[in-house]
Length: 297
Ligand code: HMG
Ligand code: MG
Image (cartoon, rainbow, N blue to C red; front, top):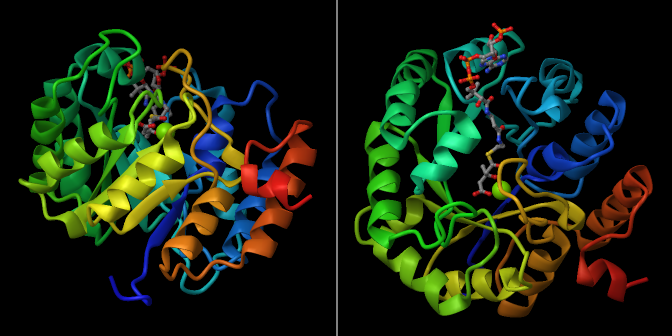
């Protein structure tokens, strides 16, 4: 590995982090968080989700949040979109990049987006068509790649099938999500390798939750296997409202520390990121889940 190899971090805190907070975070604080994250050197900050407010009330102010963000040059601000209605809401405020989200488990797909896997792919098709027409980039998520809160084990072939389908439909990148954080490094790597047999590694990202404390180890194993895009949330916030027991995403601070240790470039100023994590902890009124943040107190 060359010392200058770059790993792109996709910061998902404002979306994946805040979607599961019990206390509603105010719109102004959400905007401030996104602006602070963009000032750390992060190139991608997932800003919000244009989902049904009945399903996820925490994201009801998606349009106000997106409109309020100071769009920093060189920073991408993707948003989650579950259907055409969400796409139209997002486009009305000028969104330039979206993410659709499916799952490798039927039970989770039903609980999260009220559709079977097949129905979800049918629902995404017109969104991808509209995005192509409008020049909007689309990322695709596959959730429950290493386990499902409802059905338990998830066959790797299902992960490969859904990832391949999303890629074939036009998603430029597929983020593989261990939604409930049950994976361990060898399993994570085996899953990634299996998907990379059908979708180019350069089009894959990994997305780990830290429920069992395995997330940094899983990311390290996947970096060794060749992935170069990693999702993370500042302060280790997060969880999924439709995945009981899912705790926070891997903390961005901890990923930056890992990348430094492994000799990867990432473009993020760790001190500024830590300051942002501390500010968020004060807004949320709770301690940071980032080990690096705590170690540097
Ligand atoms: P549904 O109830 O089947 O949808 O939900 P519907 O089309 O029947 O509509 C029901 C109502 O919602 C209607 O309102 C629609 O207008 C409205 P009513 O007529 O009753 O007043 N509606 C919307 N409103 C605003 N924006 C929209 C929208 N769509 C419908 N886009 C639906 C289906 C997909 C909409 C719903 O299930 C949903 O929004 N789900 C989102 C769940 C979610 O956000 N989960 C968290 C993100 S996924 C995740 O965290 C995992 C990830 O991080 C990766 C990992 O960790 O593995 C990505
Ligand atoms: Mg997630």
